Length: 162
View (cartoon, helix red, strand yellow):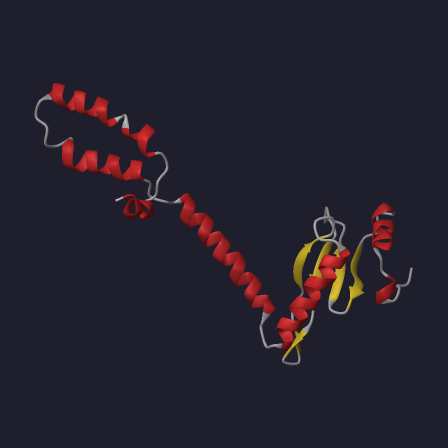
């Protein structure tokens, strides 16, 4: 089947491609916007391709079809195209956003909580200094109440609480 003109591609056309289980590398839906649906893909992906300073940029995936409608994908492609015209390198911007999101997730996963800080203080300052075993046991019993009171605060939150 030959591809239709860009203006002829509608949601019904896309749904018929999906209903017939057609797999394809690129079906153009707007200037700079195409849909890719390979054999290994579960959902078709909207991809953006353009030129920057006369060079062809690698395609950027802007979303999956059911989550991003045809109208929204066209609007997103227009926005990205405008950014390219203004001189922004959209491929690097997307990879920077992905990298910063991964870094943020890692930072939250490795956050140093108030409970961890309290346990470290207990181990360094108190355990080695108390000579009487009974006092250590009583103090440790009271110290175990702290996790319920502190919760999952981070070290950065401790400055706000003071």
